[in-house]
Image (cartoon, rainbow over all chains, first blue to last red; front, side, top):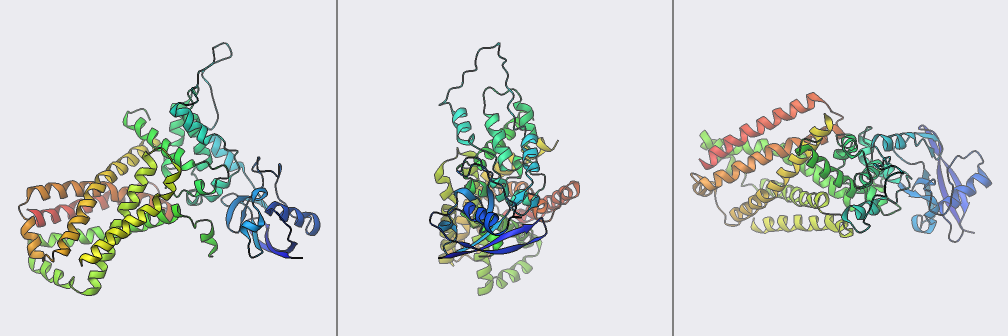
Amino acid sequence: MRTLEVRVWRGGAEGRFQHFEVPRRESQTVLDVVTHIQRAQEPSLAYRFACRVGMCGSCAMTVNGVARWTCRTHVDRVAPDGRLEIAPLRNLPVIRDLVTDMREFFDKWARAKGRFEGRRTRRDDFERVAPDSEARRQVDAAIECIGCGVCYSSCDVVAWNPDYLGPAALNRAWTLLRDVREATNPERLRAVAGDAGCHACHTHLSCTERCPKQISPTAGIAGLKRAAAAAALKGEL
Amino acid sequence: MNPALRARNHPGYWAFLVHRVSGILLALYLPAHFWVLGLALHDAARLDAFLRWTDQPLVRLGEWGLVLLLAAHFAGGLRLLALEFLPWREWHKGLAALAAGVTLAFALAFALAL
Amino acid sequence: MSARREALLWAAQRASAALLALCVAVHLATMIYAVHGGLSAAQILERTRGNAAWLAFYSVFLLAVVVHAPIGLRAVLAEWLGWRGASRDWLLAAFAAALAWLGARAILGVFL
């Protein structure tokens, strides 16, 4: 039977790669490999997963250097030579082994005002949102984010600038900025502009390259830059 | 592949790196460039001597290198303006390759002119 | 406030970039022409001295460069050298002033 040579990160920020030999199977995913190791070889291995079918984003890890959803990553695609290196997501503190502390990721989401606040109450009529309007099309292109952290983990600016809000938070802020129902957009623009916000993005496009939902946070961030400049020039920022 | 490169080995990243490094080198070069040209003001003799120095093949190569840097920064800059001001389209991912092509075209034109 | 300042710097950077796109295209074409024509320094200066159009062009070029280069370096200093804050901005202002001074001397020497 063919085997895979798998190196898995053990420990916290300090640690080492532990080596395993895992039987290779047809249509095997990287999550299958991690699950096999924990069940059959090393019960103390810590890792996250939930849906196993590419909907929740919980299983995101660094596979052969690249952030991916492990349940949607076929071994054949990333390890043609039978070698796998599995590590936790970058740019986040490591709790243990393959599990990262996502608090800072979601804190930045909140700091970017990534929360919807509508103008109307249940006593008002519905807001009309034209689905084919320019604004709604922009929102639709970016709305499918499930907060998996792959973009955040792939971003060099996040690594270079600890305060940088990051692609996911800024992308969400963009969808709200373009939402006609939103009540707090002037404050939102102030929250996302600045050297910890959209202006720190240098268009590396790593987020766009790696997003498993094919979202382009870079596009949304560019929109935030334009909006911030327009507001600043009008004295509204 | 070098572990640091594995996640970064895509066109957008290389385009960024070329743009940043060319920008830094050009920014360092400019004061020297202006100072030499300023010699024309009241030290024509020194300017002439300097210009004779630039006739050497290695210096010519350096000049070509500067043109390459400027062309790269220029083409990469146009790409960034497109990415930041035009509505996002899938084909924008090909802009890095386009910028590289434009850069090489300018560099080649200068090399042929030499 | 950081947001307003960063937004205006971004706008200035992109505006100067658009201007420089034109200036650099002209400059590159001119350099290729001059080198291809085998023009000597004396021949070039003959064409540039007293030329009001070139003087105006390169003055605009210089202004755009003086805005664009320091703002560009600002991000590099912050991200790759960890240098943020007022002292960095003062250094960049000094760099801008130096570029403007040297550039003005160059323009005067070549075009006046």
